[in-house]
Image (cartoon, rainbow, N blue to C red; front, top):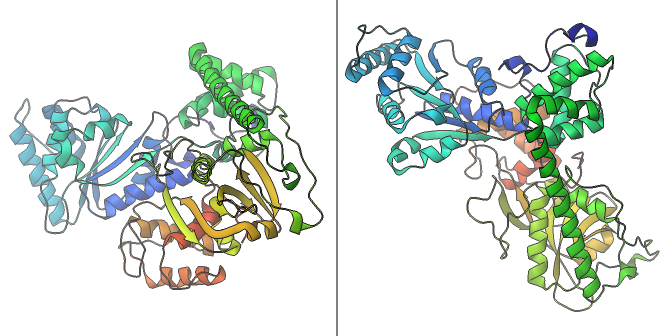
Length: 551
């Protein structure tokens, strides 16, 4: 209805799983890479999970465009079936004949096995894709596992791709399904979009539909994220209704007020109220943290303020919670920087021991990654709470930290002769460093930081899919597919078809060139430092010391 009014060629926010409208965020690219790897590796099971509306089916539709031509595909959309019904549906999808009215599992399995053997003799792949797989019964899952038992010395004759909600992971944790779980060789959990991805998502959808001007105000975009939680399907529903409302009012841009009204119509008042309550809870939590920090500051012996350059508390809140930070100007004293840097130093956080300052710094570090509360009191990461992150401890100088380009926990010397203390380095340029010291956000000249820093650092980083350790020439696996994508983008070339997913000489040479350009040992090996360098150039969802990745 509003297509002509705004100049669209197609509906920009259709919820149909159209691959051309798939916004390939870093997470969606990783999901697709996992599924492609599972197919090329001739594995038994590939698993893709995610909350409702995060784009699992759309990623799968995109995957279908990459499936080799010599493939037979059975796509099951409704898995609430008995064993016999499932086997019959698979036969129907693959065009396998069977006696009418049969209810014999053996008959179906024999026909399927003959079909798989014939397909293998003609060098054809057979792929079974099941959507909403969390609805499969244990009996049906076990039968699917038995179907994958047919194999040659080199490959399975049936590949299975399961798409499902998070409950599918819990289902596969059952003891009676452990044999199936052990056959899952590639798995990925698809998260909603982050706040930073939302503008690019909207622009992508609008451009694909034929409009390249912004139709949503910045305040409307903020409101949209809070109401949708970053779930693409919910985003699409709200945006579609909001554009319809703008058309009805003769407006050419969607305001926050109009978007809120559209969300109320789409989500219903209860869901909208829950979104507001979630935002209010986050607001109150941040206020509580600020109040507690202020009480500690007032009750404990005060640090020498003349030696700190402090900035407003709300800037610290933006560091720790960019999406939900309230903007009230809760001001701390801002002291002008001393003219003589030799008289300037970073004071230890008041009332905190060395161990306590490290624990707080590590918790701050995880918050910068978007995962507050990850670390236990002893600064270790509890099992099951890693969110794909890995802790790396090292030693170096500021140039090394600029290359790695991730926030880091640093040990600083106390110039009063006390034990050292820890702070979180959150930003770094050529002349100034920004640190979170206790609950203060402090900016200092790099010479001051260099004078107090011991050289030890701890940081977090996110390995690519399938990463098991340092990559060397000749290695194979899904990580090489990821590396090919990243190096192609860095070098401005097309992504090559990698039939064997091997770390070949082309990649080795490109890695060595990259390492040499950024003062890393040009050995052609891809370890944590090289991977972090690549991430700093491409991974927009990861926190950086330099937001633009400049080295």
